[in-house]
Amino acid sequence: MRHYELVLLVHPDQSDQVPEMINRYQDTVKKNNGMIHRSENIGRLQLAYTIENMHKAHYVIMNIECDDKVIKELESSFKFNDSIIRHLLVKTKKAETEPSKLFLIHNKDNKYDKKETVNLKNKEPEEIKSETVAESPTETKESSEEEQNENKSSEHDVDETIKEEKVEEEDEKNKD
Image (cartoon, rainbow, N blue to C red; front, side, top):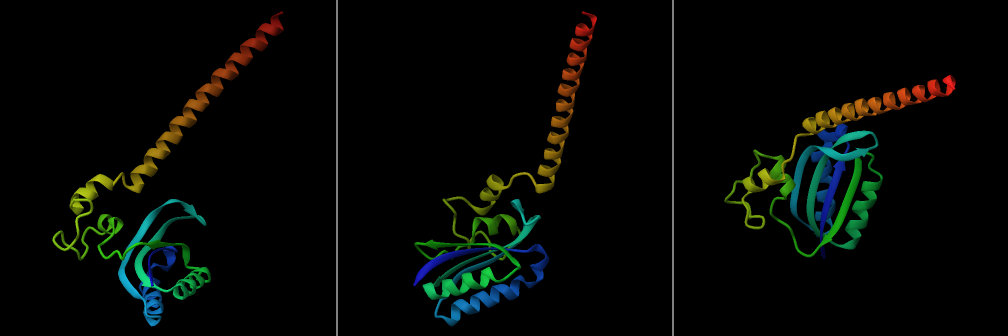
């Protein structure tokens, strides 16, 4: 049996059905003598880019150990499940049991405390949070809107200047 990491992006309108989906996929793995090493329901997060006109998705991460037959069955079920926007299945060398960085960052009041979590490259979870958490999506959206407005105004100024120069050139031609 091989180790895999599975990442699912679930349609944001189907967030209430995520626990049932996780249980269904875990049952599929367990019925075929597989093991679940880690299962994390990260929650609804901002997407890096829009997918099917959606800006957010519900993230789920699972680390499993199973046969190729189970993987084919899981991928087939992902393909025919409309609530799964994207999925990523990666083969790993070993089983990951510690909480993921994404889980630590986005679930501040999670069930793991610092003593139970394994240090990620000799850093405590608080250090990881401070290094990796950027602006909130709303701040990013506001700043991008400001940048767009600045770009529009500067483009408008350039357009006005060009128009004025053309008018002056035409006036000079008409005088001659």
